Image (cartoon, rainbow, N blue to C red):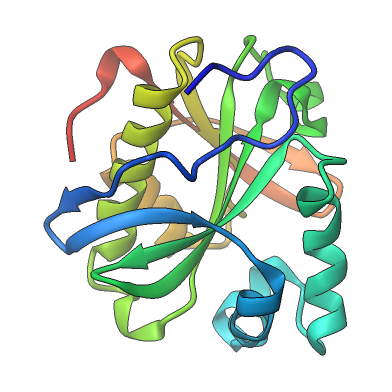
Length: 196
């Protein structure tokens, strides 16, 4: 895959091969609203997810969130995380250096950001998030050669998420004040990469 250019829209993940993880074979699949909207909306309405994503409501709420990403008006790609053949998580991979987040930290060209939620509650609190974060960071670093680090900004109150990022090889860089939350800026450098 070619690296995204400076005016890049979404990251193309369709050609990324599945990876073997301790939790099972994992792959990222592009979101298709006609197939995936009801499931993603159901996940957004899970109280654990809704507390941090703030997208609870009917399917139109989720559709409005996805639309700019799917229409190419964004530098973000929405994906399903598919573990052993079953969709169980939602991911957004985005150019952090082109995002509003870049105003809150010393961004580098081609910094890639990640948002995620574990939609299937059976996979929460069991280390699956850590395993998948490690895998996704590896995929990003493997397929986007100009990217030297993967960043994330979980809400500081979301201790399970912060812990998963730390356990996946991300380092805590700073607390940053964003319009919607106080966030923990997490960074995983290419130099410190370990394979899943």
